[in-house]
Image (cartoon, rainbow, N blue to C red; front, side, top):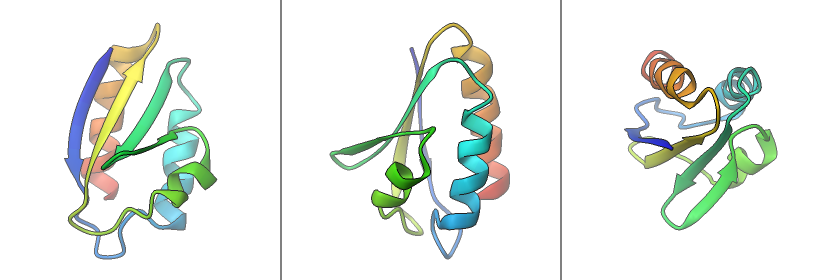
Length: 85
């Protein structure tokens, strides 16, 4: 299992456009991916779940990746967040 925290920098938070890009990115991996904000978690491969977390600017999220390609997925997702949010 790989896990990392990220603080959202985008002034609009994790809104529809980047959430859609995130789902596209997470869908390319076999691993299970969870996005957690406070005590709520969502499947990183489902846009409605991600949107239901209501992630705003300066919110800290935890990304948990577990599965056969977790190392690659965690590295690529860190880059995704850094470049898009």
